[in-house]
Length: 100
Image (tube, rainbow, N blue to C red; front, top):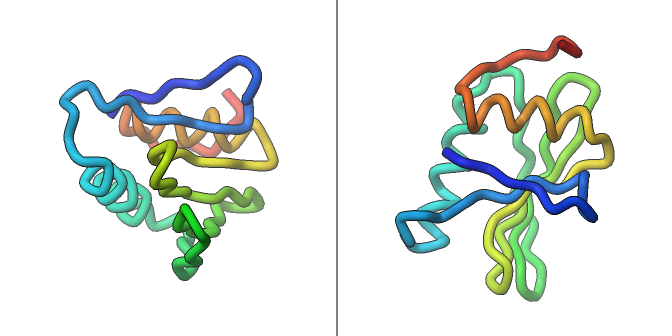
């Protein structure tokens, strides 16, 4: 699964949709990938006016998985380190918490 970031938003991780699958299916694939990682805790679904979000925790890091009906699926975090670690999971399939 390919990801990308926007320079002005270093604490967000976006997902490419080259195959133009439905956003709901893309979200489900991302959710399943996170769910398969035993070290990641996924909170209950919170429903907003235009988005659903899940507050997640990985070790001491928190992040939100967001499914926005206007902007698609992305991950928002307070710490850029967790974004880089999540990127490894989606791009390389590696689950690695060291700072390498």
